[in-house]
Amino acid sequence: MKRLQLLMGMPITVEILDANATEADIERVFAYFRSIDETFSNYKEESEISKINRGELAEEASSDAVKTILALGEQTRQETQGYFDIEHDGLIDPSGIVKGWAIFQAAQLLKEAGFVNFYIDAGGDIQVAGTNNGHPWRIGIRNPFNRTENVKVLAITDKGVATSGTAIRGQHVYNPHQPEKPIQDIVSLTVIGPDVYEADRFATAAFAMGKRGIYFLEQLAGFEGYMIDYSARATYTSGFERFVLSDDKIS
Amino acid sequence: MKKMVVSAILIGIFVLYCFLHAQAAPVAIVPTATPTSRSSSSSTATPGTTPTPGATSPSGSTYKNGTYTGNVADAQWGVVQIQVVIQNGKITSVQFLQYPNERNRSVQINSYADPILINEAIQAQSTKVDIVSGATDTSNAFIQSLSNALSQAQA
Image (cartoon, rainbow over all chains, first blue to last red; front, side, top):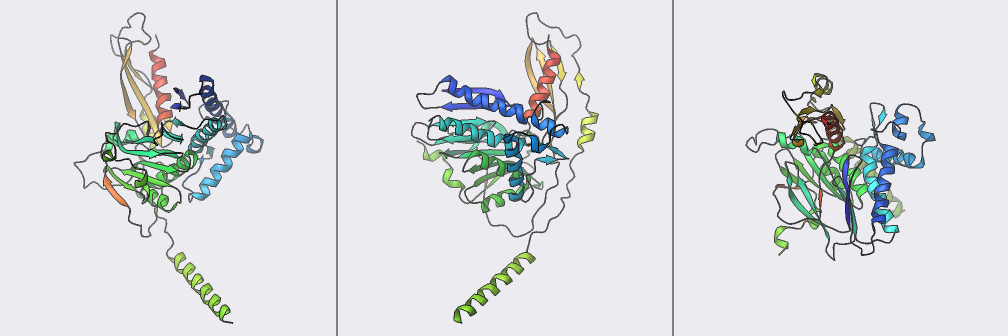
């Protein structure tokens, strides 16, 4: 059973392969994302985050979920040499950590309900559980220069995959006929991690590091990364290839 | 006694290693690239309706014909502005007038030697996939600006 809804400004897809899955099970996942949006959205005036940013709500008086996110944001800031920071210009924008955390929590809801083979995809950040009819889930890494193409196909079981980047910008900048143009930045960084929360926060932080991000990931145990730069070249971590499904492996 | 000497040597090596490592510590440099000014790009933008002259709305359709420009929406790394074209009550084109084109945050670059990682040209794959991972940084702002443009087009 597979359902898609547009929530939190992005398409969220939930697919459960276990035969006993019902509409109500999937609806519970979407309801969870809606509650997260109500609490954390910067676009909703009545969200706790908006109230904190307007000075109407003290952080200490916020809900447990908000306190958890603020603490996780601070932990991530420390673990990423300050590259990850939910505070910008004195305002809190927790979206960089809420998304991965919410997908992970939603996947936990399904696990606790007894489901084994499923995935949750929220705007390209993905938690997979179990298998797709006995095979690892196949996750494509989208070409940042052409949204209809994948540039890698990954075979993933019980892990999280997240991509940080600016796909739209790439389309305008890419010029393969100007190889002499200095490469200043990266356009896309995909991270495979133990779960989607971990993959997402380190993808965000490593992307902010620019070309150094992939080396940061190389040093992190349990994480692999695939970075694409302006010149449409990719650099990947030493253990990344274990997860790659090449065309010739499939007959 | 022998143990003491060995321990002392080990500690000495460790201290020396720490010292050398500290000397070789990453040096933060401020990037020279200056992002295109966010404030100027958003202030020059003129959000609002620019309907095509002579546009008419076919009866029964959801949107009025014309070209509509959404508001400038703040994405995490810059601003996004959308323009939609409605023909025969249907969206025929969605265009980005503005999109984040520079990082707004200063980035520290470390100068120590990098390990060698594998590098390749990206290549389209033909294998069918179950799920696709890609960037969504600008999606929130995209939807905000798009819904703004579409609300102007409401019949």
